Image (tube, rainbow, N blue to C red; front, side, top):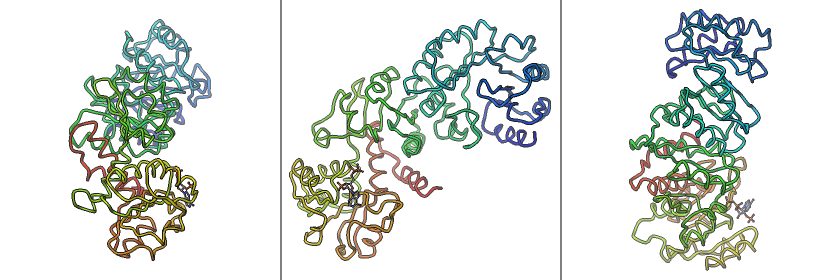
Length: 475
Ligand code: ATR
């Protein structure tokens, strides 16, 4: 009881309504909660069969809820299979709830109708999303509901229902007090609900953006873009979208009129097929990371390319800083393609060196530049060195793709690796008087370029950089 009361006090600072999960408390005492409450209370005593922790006698479970209602709880929550047993519940509103921890049932709408028939004041449906498109069905149900309804999808694919639900008509959304205190999978900490996603400010005018990824949990993009929208006073929210089937997702989510997406691993190539417009330069690169909705037409861009170039050119100065410069790029993978095409387009004299020489040859053939094995590096003249391999990345941070003695004062040295923020390559380059550009600079610039494509305005670059650095340094 002491711990539960302390949690209730902490939650009262952020939440509008507090759910007391009696099934998580030893010997729960409803009156003690009411005496200490400063916010409306929901009393819930969830049995194991519905995903809760209560394993005792059913009559005692129901009795505790009746007592909570009689004492003055604002809401009591009981499951559809036991709604009829509650009987008289005084002033308290009766939430009748349904849970499915496996999947979204085919008869979701019929379940809702049964809840209404059971005499609910509020219907609650919480079902496991197994696909991000399950959320759309829940949103349809919320919009059509004739009694107050709480509808949410659980799990990582369902996170967006917790963020957008209230804006779609859900009476409320559940957040957790803190990471690690979730009472259902996919719950978002209350601080993020309020400050990051601004759930209470989402309305019919809110523009929707998000990152299409799989996995998505560790993406920094929601933190960056939500902070940027907020700082600029733009009514928009940016969502983490865990997407398995990108074609289906893009088609189905047209119904929400999403205004833009970031696209990342593993969808950067496949997503191109479902765009209405992709310009030739992006087709040449063969991958995209940004979608802009222009009056219903989805247009694909690659800001990995523009972001990296912007970061590199910003330290060089002049109108065409890369023109005729000797640029050596280590690596011939996906990142290399995007950056290589950009360097070539800016007039750089590019040489691609790669461990697997055949890949360097193939990419160089497409771009139209020189190529060779990694050991050619000491023989090349270079103004700019670009590392687009993963050499030096955590945890092998003592590795470096280029020996320090090749790094000369005044050279520009770029590393696409951003974990660690300063790689051994960049540290040695700085020690030898090179101008360095980090993967953090590229990452921030690709996000800045996305923000500008979406809003047509300037991005708060300093703030976006702060968010990235804070995340990468684990603060
Ligand atoms: P990304 O999409 O991030 O560019 P990628 O397509 O897997 O990732 O490309 C990884 C690049 O890092 C490749 O150029 C790879 O060289 P190979 O083509 O020979 O695989 C390079 N790379 C990875 N580990 C390396 C290592 N230990 N030494 C040298 N190059 C390495």
